[in-house]
Length: 177
Length: 228
Image (cartoon, rainbow over all chains, first blue to last red; front, top):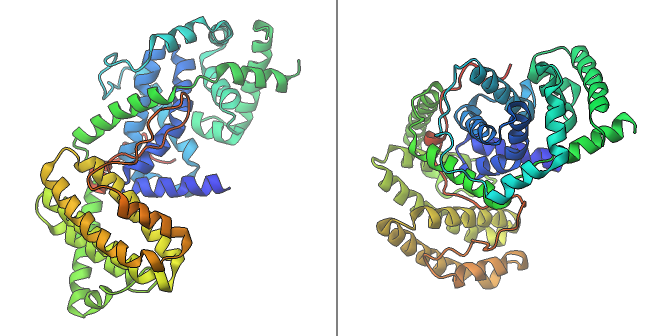
């Protein structure tokens, strides 16, 4: 609860132009947003660029965020979802130059590539229908509620439940953990 | 393995995290972009300007009726305090030029210190809150103005003035803030003591960056980004 209140304060301060508060939100949500793109694009560099773009959009539009209409998390992922849709439709060019000043050390990249279990999960995701990926990432990896996922992906809660059930069945068939 | 256990394992495998240093680099890139990009032309910015203009008119009206004047000696928790803060913001807003605005903001820190002085005996809890605000502002200003000799000088002179006030109040200050006031007195001017040094890998960092005013932070929301 305290964390929730603290977050509301941070959002409010960011709305008023406080960059430190915006930075705290960025540090908090960078990893989840990165993972969201990483598992859907399977590209660690593109995931970084898209994640940065999300925060540029958040920065520009946080004034329009209304907590009465949904949680900040849902709003953030909704921006990510829209960005990904736009990106794949070829509508969106990224604000930050792609592929320049890569922020990852070789070690970290190698670690990602060498992680066999992670590779298995990535490969298994490719066996699922594309609209299942997002539900898997949000429901299983990020532990969002069915309600939140439904809001983000624009499907009914029932639909999300069906997808998650089918996805988990399929994943259990193809991944041995 | 049941579904819950399987999902838990999946979650652990998928938990990719950046190191603290990587986050700092990414934030630095983003911050540079945001700082150098004009994002002030949008609808929100427009409404923000309108809000401020309306506020300005209100402050002028209030001043003409003596409210603004009366608010100048108010303290946090008092009814006119918000008018005082509002009129300060309006004063900064109408100043022409970014550097002059920054100088005015530096001067305003003396106002906060004066309030701390007043509140120490009346309401130590509020004094503590103001002191935190002052510390955060100074931390930001020191970083932001480090590269600008003129602003650094202005900041240093203000810090000296503020220190004089702290010296007067330190002995009577309640224990919970006495040590913090002593640190502020002992702190050399123009030196940033807030850097923590070594970064712990994977740890979330909260190092503060220079404050950017509202006019620089927000822009028109795109249709795809608003709440549904």
